[in-house]
Image 1 (cartoon, rainbow, N blue to C red):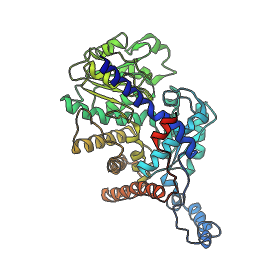
Image 2 (cartoon, one colour):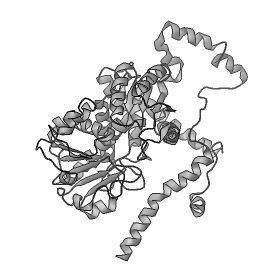
Image 3 (cartoon, one colour):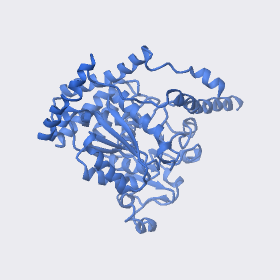
Image 4 (cartoon, rainbow, N blue to C red):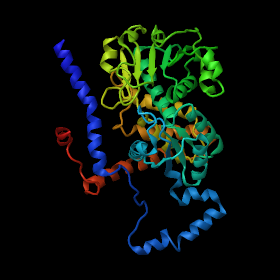
Length: 459
């Protein structure tokens, strides 16, 4: 018993480590991103080309044909990361300034993993129509928009409206990004336990932005709507639940899911939603203790638990394993089976930008998820290794190509490169982003940070 206690304490200390390092390293670098030239500058004389007077020729070209903006500017590689700071990680409504470190981190991942130039735009408004209008106003500058950390149900309305009003891809990463990577992990987890997606009984804990879109993406991927059980703070969703009837105009998305899912008409609490199910996907209140070990024991044999809350999962992985779960995933990189959006959004945007797509769809998410799952399966999967890892950079161009080809298939691509052209382009830009970062570090233009052990010793 004492040995077990020591092990748990070590794991808890490990879980606290990233936060301690973050408090020291963010001020050290004063942010995580910067703007660098991508054109050659041999002498000040070159500015006559890149700026005045030469630049006027490009301006006139775009005026004559607005589509030339994609060729003469960086718009086709630029994404805005837009947030109002109302639903940041597991921290809630912390405001636009406090949301900035997350949005900068997002931009860093966009560049390092996908070669995409992303810019954080934290807005001083909570009005959904102002957010939508802002996205319309900035559209000429960007090739895509990543909505981030916007509270529900506002986030559903903002996504639907911006996708309708804009002719560039608009994506809410808390919805589509989370859904993509959950699907990839779930597909491989089901392969390991020998269960079919079309037959699996899946419970989704939390009906916020992540699991709402996850449900729809699972539908598109072949999971039966009736085999999904959704749970919010008031219990299991079912057709005709009185409070959902009363609020269906405010949150029609949740109401629609209550009508489509839970064909056995199960009712009750969160605990009741665990009984006999093959998989539980939790995107709810950070833990530990949000999910009880006793609940996991009620699941089917060879059960799967994804506890995706950040920064602390709903149940610690070792507790879920002790309760009988065969495969456990979390959103954290310091535990096995990270189910994290970073595997999705950089490559998906790489793909849609490379064909200058006008939108991004749930079927593109499914195509990306299947490629993620296939990549991991080809290199070998196990109970503690069901999804690609961020350091496996080759997965990103593969995923980008899958998403680009799906865009072409759906008729929303402005250009139609070949599969080989897409592959070569994605590899070049993703590899270049990584190698340029390493070169800047090697040359000292990105200064070396203090050693982690020195930071932790003084914290």
